[in-house]
Image 1 (tube, rainbow, N blue to C red):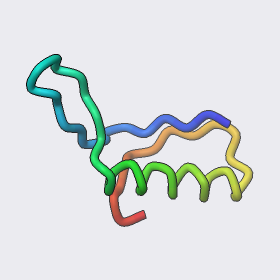
Image 2 (image 1 turned 180 degrees about the horizontal axis):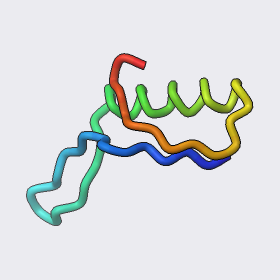
Image 3 (image 1 turned 60 degrees about the vertical axis):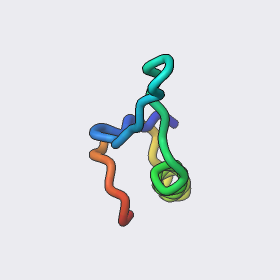
Length: 52
């Protein structure tokens, strides 16, 4: 399965500039990916939504 999430909010490390996601965003991404897997999605491109 391949899912591309667009427009995912990220935080930036002040020291190195690396992007990372907080716990709320990470949990929402995992939940949406799990729902897609259960629905049998093979390839999907979607806009990120926290409430999903």
